[in-house]
Every structure is written in structure tokens, then in C-alpha cells.
Amino acid sequence: MENTNSSWFQPTTLLLIGILGLEDVQIWFSIPLCVMYLIALLGNCTILFVIKTTPILHEPQYIFLSMLAATDMGLSVSTLPTVLNVFLLDHRAIKFHSCLTQMFFIHTFSSMESAILLAMAFDCFFAISNPLHYTVVLTSPWIIRMGLAAVVRGVMLMIPLPILLKRLPFCKGVILSHCYCYHPDIMQLACGPVRVNIIYGLFADDMIVYMSDPINSRSSLALLSRVLCDSRRCPGEEAQRRGGQRRVAIQEVEEHGVVCPLPEGGRGRI
Image (cartoon, rainbow, N blue to C red; front, side, top):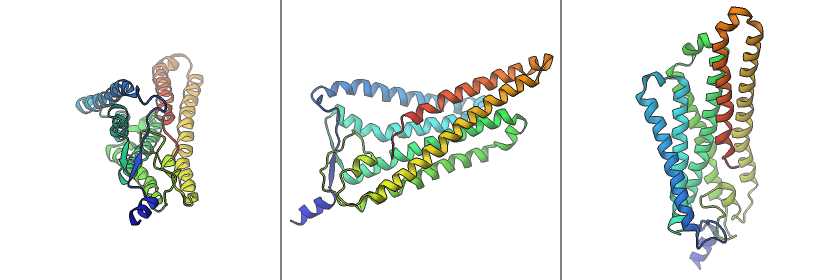
């Protein structure tokens, strides 16, 4: 009876799930999943290796890119064990505390990714709007501080999530709806009051999405406005001399507009 009450309050294990209705053939999905994970890991490792071994790439833009690659690797490694266990080995059980740990790392790396993209937007904006002071302001110590700030922000925002979940009783089953641990998914199994969890989840999500995305968008718009203004103010030879600078600026705006939404679009709600 004691064990029943204990398991009723907090389950010892949870069950992950693959593709509903395709459990008999989902092992075949593990092949493209393994290939995609391998490509992601090799691609990010290649980026880190090339930037580290090429002195000309030791600039803020590429340092931020290496931070983003490292964060993507962390996010892939966080989900890889359970995804492959479910699809390749059909091993669905996961310890409750292990599930909370995986959830923490998944959401933390997602938050860090958003912060690094924000730093990249600032870097791109400052490089175009004030190029003469670019190398003076964005020095290595400042870049390190911005990277550490991204890590601290992600960790501090996500630490309360497992703590808030641990205080809840669970009595709505043990089956999750994903092949990895996800905060709203775990929260749905609780039978206690989850208002605090919902409010904090919305707060953390707002901190990540609604503070980062507008700044990223405004950065791109500001860069584009600067390029258009320069093209109107520089006639004749001056326009030709600065034409190359404008082309580089436009290219950076395009790259920033393409790169930034990609990881953001794959991020789940908290």
C-alpha cells in the first residue's frame, strides 16, 4: 500500500511514445533519424573545427556562429538517446528524474540558442551601422561575456521547471505523447494545481520569443534602411566606392533574415 501511494504521487518511470499506429514499422524510421542526427553532429563539428583552425575566421561573427553550432550539438545530444531508444530499440521507459533532466537540457539549449541569435543580430547591426568602432567595441572579452550571459539566461530561466513539476502529484497515467521529455507533456499528467507551472511557462516563453524575435526583426529592418539611405546619399564616384560596402551589407541582411528564423521555427513552446 505504501508503494502504491508513493507511485500515485510521483511515478518512478514514464513511458515515451513513437508514431501512433506505426509501432510495428517505426524501426525503419530510425534509419533516416540516425542519418539526420549524424549529419547535424558532423556539420556542427565541421563548423567548429574550421573556425578553430582558421585564424582569419576568429572574428565576432564566426565566434557567434561557433557558439550556435555548439548549442545545436547540445540540443541534438539531449534528444538523441530517447529518440533512438524508442525508434531503434523500442525501449520506451525512462526514469522520472531522468525525464526531468532531459526536459531541463532541451529547454535550456533552446533558450541559449535564442540568446545567441540575439547576439548575432546585434553583431550584424553594429557591424553595418558603426563599422569604424566595430572591432573596438566587440572585443573578445565582450564576446565571452555575451556567451556566458546566454548560458546563464538559459539555465536560470529553466531551473524552476523541474522544481515546479516535482511538487505536483501525478495520477493521470505515465504515457507521454513525444519520444522525448517536454514540459507541457509532463505537466498534463499531473492531477494537482498547475496554474503556477502554466504561468511560469508562459513567462519563460515570452522571455525567449517575444523579447528576441522583435529585436532580430528590427535589426534586419534597421540594416536594410541603412543600406537604402546610403544608396540615396552617395552619388557618382562615392556611390561606386561604397557600392561594394552596400552589397556586403545587403548580403549580411539576407543571411541574417534566413539564418535567424530557422532554429526559432523548430523551438517548441514551454
